[in-house]
Amino acid sequence: MRQITLIDADRIVKYNRTDAQRVTRLLPLMVDGWDVSLPCVVIDRAGSLCAVNASHRLDIALRLGIDVPCLVVDGDELGEYNWDSLCDASDILEIMSMAGLDTDIAYLALSAHIESEQI
Image (cartoon, rainbow, N blue to C red; front, side):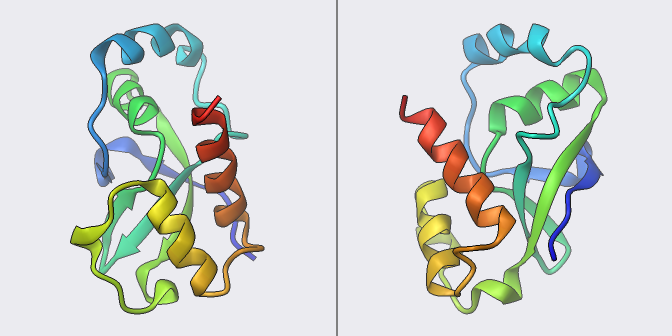
């Protein structure tokens, strides 16, 4: 079963750009650390850790020097796909579903993240 792993923010590559105003707004919420109930989903592609979500929180973690609670998915679990053609986290969610990971904790966390962003 996949578990949350704490990873140094310097080791994680962000997939998305961030908005400086949003980072500034979220910063006070993370001064005491990253809320473990909101993990970052990371794809391990041959040792390169690529964040699928939480780009703003990753920026803050870098500023504050805090570790990131991650759910790491090995790229091999997802099968063959064209990483460059992916647009956003919902694309990864679809790939995870096609790979049979739709009951995996990383899938559920990513799904919850996408849902919260749409509110």
